[in-house]
Image 1 (cartoon, chains in turn yellow, purple):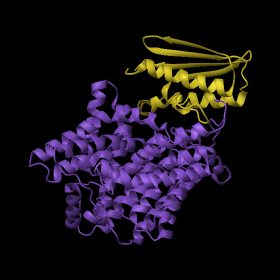
Image 2 (image 1 turned 120 degrees about the vertical axis):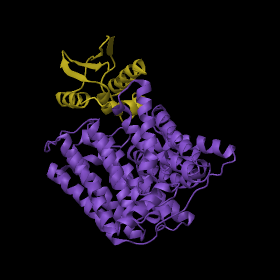
Image 3 (image 1 turned 90 degrees about the vertical axis):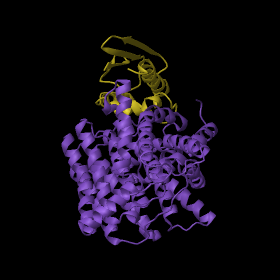
Length: 115
Length: 423
């Protein structure tokens, strides 16, 4: 798919900005590109997010993938460093999202299937 | 941090959402047939609309009559809703905004002849990139802003027949082919603060095309064909449509009176999809409310509801699903009105009324930076929109989107630079 690597980088950029601004000062990222999917895992250490935040993140990142929104807006992901976050956009760019708090860390796994 | 609110509302299937939207073109169709007179008059009106150059400002209510203009809008709306059904699209806020924008501009600029080449160009782009058409359909719907390119080249007597139609249709296909990558790229200029982003992209494309035509000694001049008769039936029909949207919203989510204020916390910057963030009930209610507010403003100013004003109203209502609410629209609108008063413009004129309505393209600036910056943005918009039309010669219908992009791209970095903060 066109700009696939750049789109993955933008998703990571957006989430890096979110967690560093709103939550923690230590994050680990892992990106694994497979033939049929890309898996992005995020570990935000010593998270301050609560169960309610996790629920919100689950809802918005786990929303249905929207190819038309991705095609039009993907270049906005990671662009803004203040006030707003483009989590709706990230949700539109991934097929599955798992969000949980484990041992004081916020763990997110995002899966983006290759079309 | 606001992410998403917990929403409790009635579950709607995709088909039910489409049916809610389908009421709009059905109403427009019956209204048009009711006011259109005998079928022969209607056909003559539709033919005049199809064969007009449609460049800014060509008011279809004046060119083809009220009946034909409403039937044209209904046909285009049916076509676009059919595409959403055919491609199994999730009915999100952006698609609702796109449908309403296309409907609105079907009263001045878009007809079944001049939009089709752009859709075909979008189809060719999706084939070329090997991506599904459903990925590009949204951009292509908005890209019909440049539909006058097709009509201008086909019917403005620039070229002899049959080359005029061949060149016009080819230009439309080219627009549909290039608009997707271009519109995505343009977002970075204004960072999503200009909701009518395609208007900005189309302004750039229109400027390039017009410059090429002018360098070949082809004259591209603006039109000024306006319907200037007060018609209370149109006002009443619109009021009923917007009340319908509010009623549907209340039916889906009866708790709206208590929770409506939640929407006012959102900045509106792209992408703020209210259907996802707040549910369909609140979204439809907000759309209807913005529609009624637009009607109230126009009535208070004594303005005429004609093609361009209908486009303004429908676009405001559509983007009530994707970023606009009364709180972020008000400062920008106030800025435009104040600037118009200082300059000495007539607030009841169509030009100022549509500037007031379309200026809400930069509502996210007010939503993000507050009242005073919003007023400043509105005033700047007033100054810029009156000057950019000549650069694209009127072939970009979303002239305010072009101006809004310039305002946002200019103002936002400056305001950001002067804001206090560590980052």
